[in-house]
Image 1 (tube, rainbow, N blue to C red):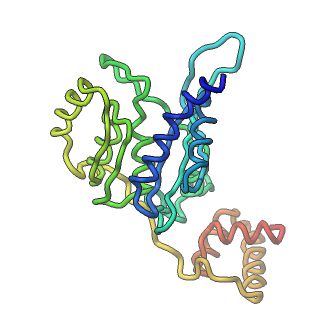
Image 2: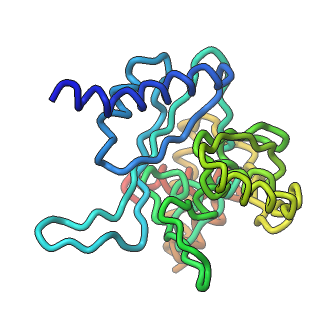
Length: 265
């Protein structure tokens, strides 16, 4: 049994060691795994200097049907960094601070650590069970790199990450042990327009209110609460009142909302 466990652990150790060697100080890595080998990957990572940032759950649209146990329909995404430098994390790359959907911050929701992203199946094309959705790859690359940065995939497979990286104006490098798969996909890379996907992205609203992030003064809190009660007394809706107060006090809508909740409004 010890030899069997060792044979499972060794590839994970080699992978983790090479990741640690290749990453620049401050560089980040996303490792996507099912639960079967997760423990071996985590054990291998614990023997490196790499630091855990997040353990993300990716929930997809359907799993493999089973009769005698729960159906697995998620993967684990381990987000780690190499210490020694500043890590890239573009907080407002997809949604601005004040963008909302039915009163909920889009930025906050997008950065929660449970993601619901469906797998892609294209009719008439060969299915690759390991092919990651372009939406998932785009999200990872946008948050953790800038245009012109290098994106490395240690298991290129169908070159999904490389294609997405080039389309987003990044440089792509990687490894693939299957010569047939490599030769087939590398030839198609010439059809990717460098940066061609950038003009299809929605522009986040990053206009930050003038007083955003500043500490509230007691007199400003009292004045805001009086004005809020007055607006509600005039039969303004809560949303309308918050919008008016946000503009008047130079604060984000969610900052005003949180303050009102704190004071029982």
